[in-house]
Length: 115
Image (cartoon, rainbow, N blue to C red; front, side, top):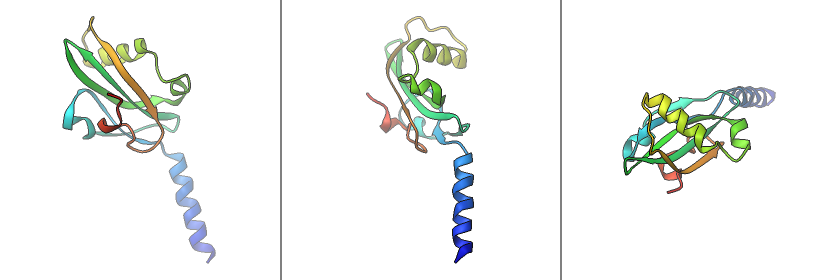
């Protein structure tokens, strides 16, 4: 009887040492949003932002520093910089429409974004 409890303790301990799994994409929309899964560091949460540029709406999602989530998620300028750096372009009309942090596996899918 002691062995199953010991094994459960080890499994739970390993899980607490691993970070979350989050959906990850930049400049995606629709069905492409929930396809790529990223393993985060232990000190990261999942994040998702709905943004628009050129009149079109897009999603950016992935791992986010948990410290940034504690200060009511991330400032719009930080998100804009991240998106522009990742895409390799400067988007003057980039607007953040909504943003969210969450702390469960795969909690940042498209259906989780505030629209």
